[in-house]
Length: 478
Image: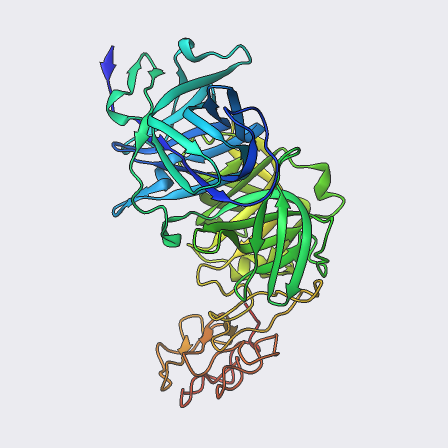
């Protein structure tokens, strides 16, 4: 046996006053106590650690009260929950609990985990020690708080750490110890991760671009509030105009804002009838490699569902009938590959082949790293009425058109600059802060830019120079 630094995982429980009933039985009567559940990580020494979280209960004298439950589980790379400045947090769920005294918590994890030691390109499969077996094939780990927490309508924050110093690994079998941790950073929205949450919309209201609704994330639980803003992309996976309202099944990607007490949506995907049949596997990550010739995209995953990656990247392949969506509108495969660049974020649903580490996609969604997605830095994408989508308009800093010049990119800065030489047929025209290719309030195809920029095929910026008008074709929107 040897001791090896593996992980520190935690979750924070924020108890705030709000109406509703409870689940389970604490040591007291049901009261207005909404528990918001987060996870965090103080891992050190490994590049990736993938675990699957299935449930979390608060434990009181009168029994256990569930605050999170997912039979499939939420699979998380714990390494994403820590950076050079400290802990990061991921919201899991909000649920009402009975008033009472809670002395500890119980966390249920899938028995298997995958660890990538520093520098490893292939993960090492491990299991949690049999002492944690709960009789259902999972691992249940209980611990006590430093002192009991009284929940009687008042706010309370509890941070739980998986006690890194006491994780032991022997022959790929892991023994853990949990304890109550510190609270630093949990009230800072910049320390919260974006993640996907599926559920049904209730209580829908608001005016574009600010909509509010409750997402019923799990059956039998109360759900949690969601808010959209000018930066939220609302779309359907088939690229058609989205219809967002009460009763709609959606997948929301967003982060928890402690000040608002709401999940701020980065995107809302309105599910189609085909979507609701379900996909066995999903992956989202930053693009590291792609090829239109061999028909694949490779991503470094930071979120997966339905599988645990066994490598540092996942290859996404495309068969016939794949729906490609960029921002809030459908594009062709050729447009998808013309627009994608390394560092963009790609989300794909389909089936996963563990032997090949390949996800064969039925639906692919492209998010540009700069948030453009067919719009500007100040609010790309659409957040239309109830909801009219497919809005290609940008803010004041839209996207790029194309023109001649395989090495002759015409790049307009704030005063217009020319770089490179002219040539071939794939050079790009990129507007600067005053001359974008997809700006303004309603343009959509790289024709007019910003407030003073001109066409996306040859001229950019306020005083940018002109590309070779004899080469290439007119610019295409990105």
